[in-house]
Length: 176
Image (cartoon, helix red, strand yellow):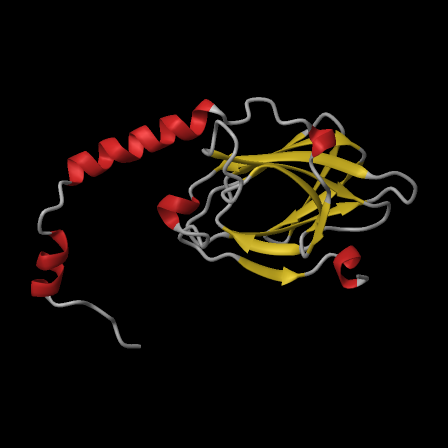
């Protein structure tokens, strides 16, 4: 793999005449301007559900959503149909999940953890990443949970230092 770089002379030319402190002030002012008309109340009923490889989700805060006051978190609600499961994923971890409705279990790095409405599931933050998948044990009722994690995508990239890999798709995505 070839590492691309630019010569020191070209880099020096690109930096000539720039004042990076002023650039920081400019970014601050742009962010303040963006926040003036930003959304402070995100109404769930106004957000569409999406079916993706990981499952049925409704995104409240996401790195690609730019009209909210905060961009420092990722927040979504997810539903698992009766007897179904989410996709299986490997990523950094550091997510907190509150089970709003239903019961089931999560397999985290090969270990099964049972939960029910009112419980909090914590996906640990691990440098090599975690592998997890959630299952709905109830054949008649949905599972619904809300998940939250720090938005470190800009700081660490989507891989977040440990990789971001979809290992298995949820059944609902495959049926599309």
